Length: 298
Ligand SMILES: Nc1ncnc2c1ncn2[C@@H]1O[C@H](COP(=O)(O)OP(=O)(O)OP(=O)(O)O)[C@@H](O)[C@H]1O
Image (tube, rainbow, N blue to C red):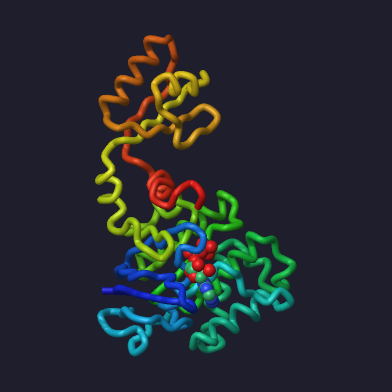
């Protein structure tokens, strides 16, 4: 059970922006809602929240129309919505009380969360006095403080340094263990791979890929080759007629047609005296799948 969207169609004016979106985010799982800019992620989320009307389709929670059976929802919007002049504590307590908590419960939850995210000392400060990353943490707390059943996070990791990203990752894992249903919208594919069991990639309001991430990857086969070397491999790859999909200082990720082609490439490099520090044939990353499906312009 959890959230189910079936054949959602949405138009703005004459323009169809969602062409029959279907997805299922199950209890205790995170669903990755992905797509390039303008693909329809926010419109899908806003439909779930009841903020926009849609032309046809259905959205259910635990099998019943969400309009009649609305779960408590925690939403971290892409455009942040804190009041800069207000105190962190007052704002969080206010949000929690709006969601039905009593003042003592809201204060307790606020303190617990500030402690958990390592920003307890900022309780009495105005939001504008906090760094961007800490403001982001306050915003995250505002979406979780009332212990919602359905958690919708839009780019939750933006503005967080690696230490704080790991802290948030632990919070997300805890929420999943508590049985929350999560929708995770992000352009950070590495984070999506970390949490999401199911994903859907939208392109101009259509679903280009959808399903269990492990199955999607398996369907591609092991066509991704990772090479590491202190030498520049670019000329060798060009000789072999392959172009890197991703490239960093000493690593090259290339797409091959088969494992045989990958081995042929390795032999040719060995023959040319190239020293490889790493040679790994693997399934593509979500990043590669996204680039292939959505296109480099996204
Ligand atoms: N209020 C609106 N009126 C008219 N068109 C809209 C409105 N909101 C969104 N759209 C259009 O709907 C399409 C989908 O937009 P949406 O914001 O859902 O995309 P998105 O995937 O969330 O993009 P991003 O990653 O850039 O936030 C876009 O073509 C957008 O211009």
